[in-house]
Image (cartoon, rainbow, N blue to C red; front, side):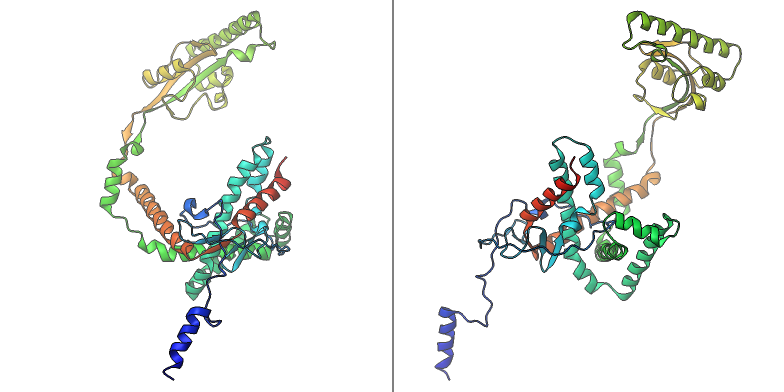
Length: 408
């Protein structure tokens, strides 16, 4: 027996053993896109309309290659032996083209309406972002399902029901109309609910796991307040009433000749002089503005919302508004584009918001910053254990499909 043990050890060392795992079959190549380096740290947001289930296409065979590990620590297989270009493998799960293209269909349609030869660049950015979101969700989902409590899963179902009812309300409570809309968008109610359930499960799990690690105290908020004081300064503003008569409203020929422009100036001046006369006769400014002004606020008595310096294109009008006392009315102000009369209603001096007024805003911002940082660290750990197959081919296939469907 003592002689058999060394013999077995020697046999295993030189010849290998079929009962021991072999590493020679790991075939990994370096892709042109190593997604996790620049992937968003925040958790994936729920998608309003998930894609329909896609059938798995015929597979293709690619030659074996050597292994490469990305700086993020996980392995990416660019050309696997048996993974179709129309599918992206994330560990033992698969992401289809429809899962990526369907949630961003409206954005892709908008990019297609933009025309020009820039569609591939715009669509490529949208597709990369959605692939990242789908991969994030896929990597986290199984762990979330294992670790969430029964009570938390009940919360997911309750939230799913609330969102379903919210969607129904948009169609007057009609399940038929909702189902038809989903069908028109290329999906169905069960698929919509399944994707929403997945997204909610991931969100609840991340919040349960990561939010307890976020801690913000008063000193941190006070330091942020003093270090970013410009964020909390309110600029000086002025409220004005305005009677405005643009010269362009009286130009009768296109293109305008010099004679036509002069005639327009005279008519605009007659209009503003009539407004001034009405004011001098004691008429209310708002009524005069409604009668004589040609500006966008004429129907509101010429009243503009509070304006900061630099808000108006007519500098002379803005200067009058800020320099006059409250209740004061200017004379006729003529600019290269028209004639104006300004009444200053109210001055609001610039001031710094008190810490107590912005404390809640600062706390929310600091919590979000911490959460994003913690999320990023968590995702890097998740990626370090992930194997993603077919990244390059899948992204190219998704882009080609988007061009075919949405480019004009």
